Length: 631
Image (tube, rainbow, N blue to C red):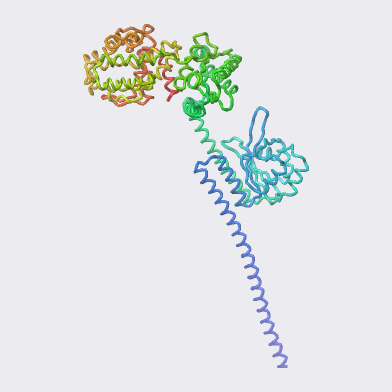
């Protein structure tokens, strides 16, 4: 009995051991299986981390490019190649939406350079990026644009067919059959709340993960930011070179382009022409119908210029109602035909309320009428204003500069003054100035006239800057043209602008440069300088008889409080009024011994305050408009 009892006890202990061993085995098995699951989870998380890291690096790459201010096209091409190469998509592209008179269409503006697209381009013959793609309202593109959400489609063939319907069905089938792509992920793109286009990703999978959706959304936002930044940059650039009202180029761009065209013309010995156009009766339109209709007339001129221009022509609004057009490679006969076409097209326009509008047009050709571009611009202006004086709504071809130009009169006047020692300056200085006005070829250069006038001014006003006189003359001439003054009066104004203050050379320097306020007696002495210039210096010179009254009255005020004759209103020559306001403006923006210079804006405010007193109201309005455009 004890044997069996012992055996039973042993069996019991063996069973307990077996149970312990089995239990331990289960524990080990569970640990092992749990470790396998952890390893698998770690591997998955590592893979996800690597993908996330790649995505972040790609986004960082895009951000760096945008901060580097690279061109938009370069940024977009790098974007599509980055996401395709780094993140494993088969192909990527960015499509932009366009609108024209025929409706909506699309074009590929950036695409990844991969095997897939090369194969497609080979099969369809004409590369996809060079095509004008069809916008189908029932396509995936229309759906994503309307919902503003990412859309995944498995119908690759149908999507391709919707944008290139001219490609045969069998080619579409061949493209799909040989492609590893299983789906297209279409993401709509917006810039400043406007639909820009789409970002397309061709994937080897038939579905998107949640993380993938989030990433593509984030990625699209970066593309949108790049597009917006580029758009803002283009807007700023456009504002710097274009006229806000018309969309044409502005004066600054015109002048920069003109320099390049002159260089090209001289290098290639090829002519080009300039058309100058001035809208007729703009002031009457503004006064009768309001400035809104005046703006409408100006915009109509711009539209006509755009419609009748070649792609290489440059049309610009020079200010107010004046426009210029550069016609590269066009001689005078061709330019006249082009100008007449523009004039006729404008005449055929009918504006609401206003009715018909017309323009006066002038034409000059570089290397035909002159090889000096300043002369060409001046000749164009002269021809344009000749059209106005002859009845408006016509084209006038410029004539070459005559032998007795205003420049020659001015040069001869300066030489006469310097030779006869009518002004108290040193002989050496007089001879130096005379040498600047003459040369062996007997050619006259306007810049020499401006230089001499500047140097004479600096004798009695050391604070005067070189180059100011040219700016004064150009501003005065532009203002005179606003009032349709005849060419003869404008030429007299040019000469008067060079000479109007020459009487100051006869006054004591210590009086003109006095740093403290002048006494009444000193002021009266300074007020004598117009008469000194007119009677003591210029009257003995026979060829400036018409200039003397302009200079004599250039300090008369509109209300009669000026000097020396105290005449008022229309009794004051318009050219004298122009000199007064131009001289006052430049005096205000230049330093004096008794005050600092004012800003142009501050100077205009001072001039506004004197409107109707010192100056004619209309003159002030035109002057402010002109200076605002130039600045």
